Length: 191
Image (cartoon, rainbow, N blue to C red; front, side, top):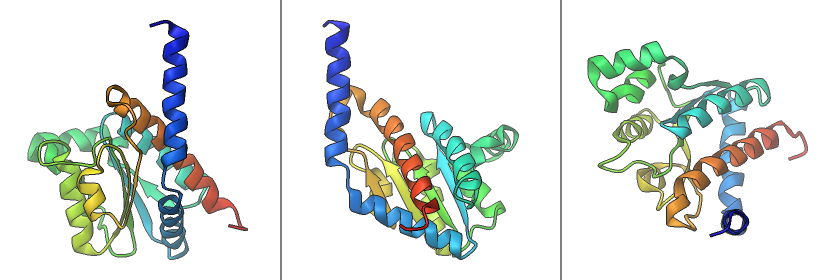
């Protein structure tokens, strides 16, 4: 395959995702996060792998641009690795949320390619279960079939998997695009 053909294929896949993405769910996430802001709640953003980088970036934007008190455990490698060492990787997020006193005024945002399953991202599943237990809102931006996030989130935006070989790069790229859309929509006064 020629490089130009690969570029065209990749961009056409992105165009297809753009056409398929659920705009209503995006709007619902914006409304939930605007309510969190207006009620002085906090937003905790969780992700692993490339989604962890997106979580870190999102904290900056939600805090600085949208004015929402936001945090992610992946920004504190010392605490993250201490929880991993002492309790195991699957407990890193739930223990961090417990220490942060997650409550019904707060929300968690899950960024994940697969949304958590019994064999992957157990740390996200335990965090979502805990959020449900304390009455916090759950929003997620995931791909594949949505995994556990699609089942337990108040709103789950699923990035359509249009090409099996490129689910992860499309999912993580679209997380960034959607996070910027959501942050800036919260800031716009007329929306």
